[in-house]
Length: 145
Image (tube, rainbow, N blue to C red):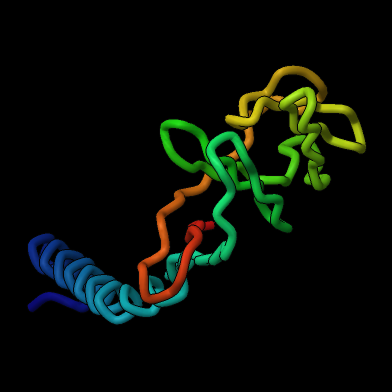
């Protein structure tokens, strides 16, 4: 007869296997229960686009200055450029004679298409989608920010 201190080597291996199996099962159960919680905590709702109606219809070569953007109308159609400088976020001014967007803070300069010309700003200005308003709504444009 064997004493408890003299266990058979196969029993010890079996016990170790069952303990490890039990640990893996618990780990699997925890993963299945925590996965939805972790997905919920990491979820970010997509930002809804902001639609701005411009009830003015400038002629070809004209523009409309709004708070967040400048709407230009060219021969190829309308386009909108952000008025927020890509350097530090200052509100840009439009110099009509020079056809430039100028930052009053640090003198970054941009074309009417939003391309950077000079200054401390390193990136071009964002552009926004522009569509004509439906006839029921009146004349003008809808800019998607």
